[in-house]
Image (cartoon, rainbow, N blue to C red; front, side, top):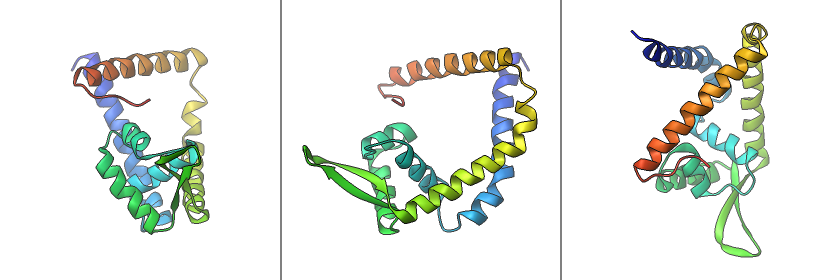
Length: 156
């Protein structure tokens, strides 16, 4: 296996381990909510004037799939829709109080996982972080270009 393959396999392995380690705690704390719903809630809270198009672009999903998910979140009382007075055509989303509770639980879990893994990150030098971040940005730009070649847009 060459180094490129080792890096890709390493990323995949790390991701799978993180998912496996965090899964039970996430599922117990966020019972009744799918991962995609929780991440949709997170995006809405962190990004002002979230709408179906922005969500679809961010999650690489169709607008139809996002529309279906936001309808479920509206029905569960986790988000509400609104329009701006200067644009009655576009529908935006924001969290309800109940949605903010789910967001807070999710954020607290991420903080807990971050604290668990801090021991590794404390050993990484600024130079190592810079190298990793540079690689991730470069690879991401490459993938954006490949997505564009397919006639699709990548995340904003």
